[in-house]
Length: 234
Image (cartoon, rainbow, N blue to C red):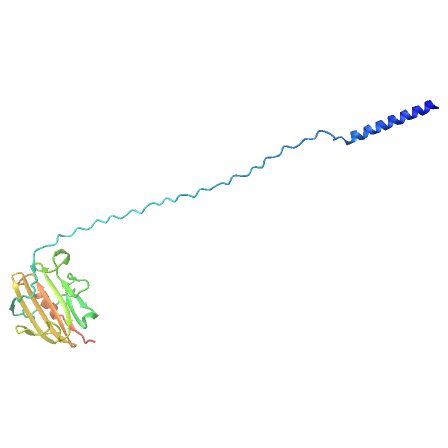
């Protein structure tokens, strides 16, 4: 009986031992546990896009070659100042040739009704009532009239203006039916002046021509005088 009890005790102890061993094995991790290597997190470097450089191609500067002109002439006679020339009778306008058809007409509101014809190749000054038969750019001094040249001034003045009174040696005349006077002076072999002034519209209209020759042919100027028209103004 004691032997049987001892065997039972031993068997029970063995079972308990085995049972305890199974429990420990069950709690052990199953298989190989691999600890993952952490992946490095790479922060991307910002990509800088370079600003393109603008290449400016300079616009070439135009090189202007001046057109050569004839050298200014120095021949001519200076216009006298406050000097009286020899007064001669004005040429007649009775038998003049007809005014050429290609002549231009001078008409400007500032002339207050005065119009006349003149050759198309004459030069009209800028900002002033003056016509020249020659190119003023070829004259070094504006106070000179070249040989064969004609310079014509035209304007108007009030009746009591300077230089409108009739000189004692002037000749009576008319332009476009308006009464007035004209006067020719010769200042030497290289200068002649012919002035014509008439009254209309309570004004005095004046046309004065200077010639580069004392014995100049005045046909062209006389044709200009014959073409004068004076309209009512205002």
